[in-house]
Length: 495
RNA sequence: GCCCUCAUCGUCUAGGGGACUAGGACGUAGGCCUUUCAAGCCUAAAACCGGAGUUCGAAUCUCCGUGGGGGCACCA
Image (cartoon, rainbow, N blue to C red; front, side, top):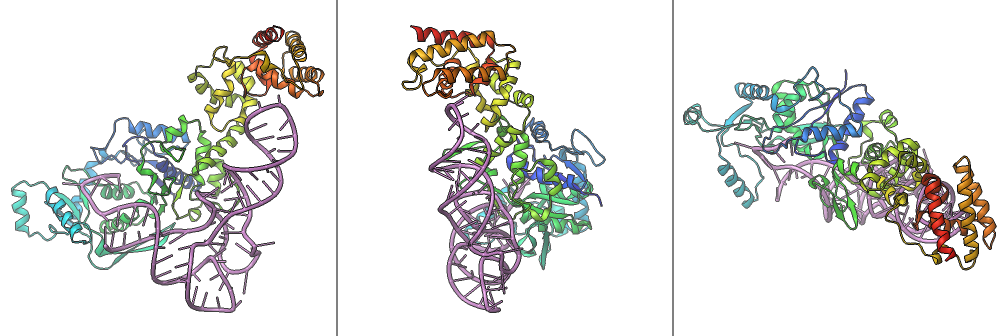
């Protein structure tokens, strides 16, 4: 049997990191079993649907590399993949249930319902629909229909016995049927609720495994009874534990955008991770280790290997928080794996946005020196500010000397020799620059080591306290600009 | 209130009756290296929620607590 799984977000906005994790696990499972991964849009609540959300979600999934075999844009044999385009299907199935005695029309108004709810709360009774329309006589129904009262269709849940769900993550869970209320299947506007649409579509689309967040688990017995009422085979359920706020209080999915928690910036939208300078490979690897472990001690799991190792039984049932500090570390690891051209391309948007003028050639030249200095892509900005002629710190002669190891006249000599080297060196490459400057440095300091001179040289050339290593900086800056800055330093030292 | 569920270092986790002196990772602290900042390497501190029970033996199995999370909509 071919594995067919789906990710079914509702288009209420962006893709949440928790949703991305559900999508990832589902996708991993599909790829592992050479199955199909389907994207379905659950937009049965017209009020909550946001224009553009479908595209945003698709963009985020694509950015993560989670490709789907069937979906709104790609099509497939089980479409349409947008629920609002399948309304007639749900209505037909709801009617079928009514005709076969598994569902009934309910004419309760929302006022009635909230009054009932209020009473239940006051009396500390179990909350839920009490089934008052369940036993309407044919006459009463005729009367209400005559009056054209709006109605919904509710599932006629069995009152006796219990329903067991076999969850791939948690094992067997048993619910008493008496505690499952008669859920609305079809709303008065003719749209289905999640329960109906979900079950009908999963069956029609031949979904074999349902992977979804744990917040759905209490609806599983309802769904199982729906499958049975229809006479359909059950899919396998796997409920993923939730991601909690950093404080551990409440689920993260309640948060709609990044926020600060004890000095830590907490990202919640996938686009925030992207904009924050995390690589998609990092986010995927990071997410794959939340509530999941293959049992070995590895932290770095590139997608291909994550697919190969993926098993439902390795999913951890306990809820967890996102270890953001580990995310930073992981991103640093993935950045180090990037080739210089890849790194340069990744950094580009950030330096541009920061207004730092740096040529493609220069950026590529400095890229190797950047890779182990970045946790996040925008970390490159302060490092590369020196490339721009504007906005550099003021340098004074006193900052270019070191009392003990590099007195004024030595500093001047060093800078002059460096100036000559830069002007003459051919080819202008890292080897020549570094060996030449190392030699000059060693010859000019009191302790005979290049270090003290190189530190001052960095300051003179980059005009930053913190910068990429000088040799690389000089290479990236280029012969002419470097010479100009050295001349300025010489001018200060000879004044 | 009712129902479901979860529980190992600060965090993410390994472990599933004896291999546990409870392992790894991030973070933290210290050290090495070093032209700054990093990276890298080394070291350290740091956990089995509590109580009963089962057993020769419990982090591991059972029960009861406690704590956390989720659900109880004409939202998904």
